[in-house]
Structures are given as C-alpha cells and as structure tokens.
Length: 253
Image (cartoon, rainbow, N blue to C red; front, side):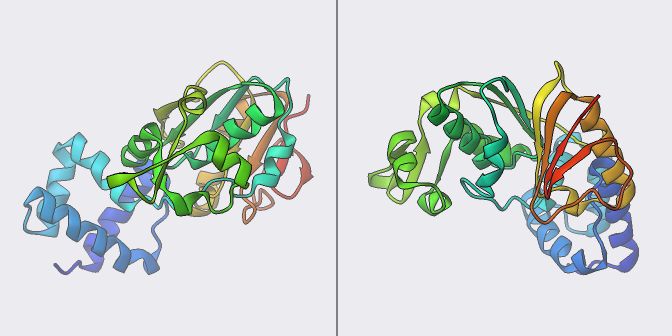
C-alpha cells in the first residue's frame, strides 16, 4: 500500500476536523503503517476505498481514530501534580485518560490521603478505554509506582496472567470511564474541582489548543486547578487562568 500526498492531506483534514489532532508531514509514514493494519482487518484493498469506507461507516471511523491515537503512559507519571489534590476536591476530571493509568494513580493517591473523590476519566480512543475498564496491565507499567502502593492496590497475575497486574476493585469503583472528544463534545457537568489534561495538547495546533483550554475553563469551579503535562505550556495562547507554577493553573474569580 502506497499513500499519495493528496490522500495524506485528505486523512489529515479528516483527523483534524474530527479530533483536533494535527498530523504534520512527519507523521505520514506512521499514518501509512497504521492504515495498513486497518486495511488488512477490513479487507479493503486500497487507500481510496478505505476513505470511502470511513465516509459511510461510523464504527470504522472510531477504529480509525483508535489506530492513530498515541496512548503511551504508565502509573504515577508526573505524580508531583497530585500534591495539589486536597480533601475538599470531590469531583475530578482526567480529560485525556488514555488507558487508565492516570486516573487509577490519582485514585490510589487519594485513598492514601484518606478520601474518595469522584473521578471521571475520558478519552477519544475506545480501545484505550476498554483496557482502562478492564484494569489489567503489564507489570512494567507500575515501575514508577511506590512499592507499598503496588502491594496494596494491585493484584499480581499468575498462570496465563503471569507478568500482569490488575487494579483492585476498590480503586476501579472510584473511576467512571467515558468516551469524550475534547474538540467536538460539550463539557460534562457538574463543574469540576480539578481537571487534568496532560500530554495531549502537544498534538493540537494553537487554534485547537485555545478552543480546548477555553472549554475546560468553563467546566472548572472557581479556585479549581487546571493541570497540564510537564512538557506543555499555555504561554502561546490567550486564556483566563492564573499561572501557579509550570503545568499548574487556577481558575480565579
């Protein structure tokens, strides 16, 4: 399968309009590799044929977005951000939850602090959300988690599950997973005390980042925290948040 520049531009526009993800020229080879797998699965024998399939099949379109979404994460990634979570924070949104490591890590942190907030965890990828709801991971995903946390909140697999761990039910009950498109879907309610949106805006252009940040601002309570990834910044866009420190912002009256 060989993708032409024109076909790449069609996919690029389709992805941008539907998800806000900006596939720059350097992503052409990656997109081609991901498409090859979808063509094998669907039995479509050409790139143009697959474009036509996407136009008429909403289910395949979701599989397509799953295929191009990057979901690389692990437990207790950038866990210093959790220090901003307080007992009065009862309603938390992980707005780019990927396969669940972030919201589960947050739930474990809160349990250790003695409280149980409601955690909404959303992502555009249905495949990632299915992994998250199952709560089973390679043991390597917990390499950054403190040892006592692993012993307390994970079950170690054996037999055919050797090398895997499962998040215990007490933790899984604290998290509600839901598919959500940061670009096209209206924000959920009620308002949130804290919103995490980490390591996803790097895939958006400035216009889309601005729109997403505004949407999340409207979903946040006054004096609520907005937390982004360590490699991200809001400095290039206009916004109404108060800067606290790198990655940490607050909605103030």
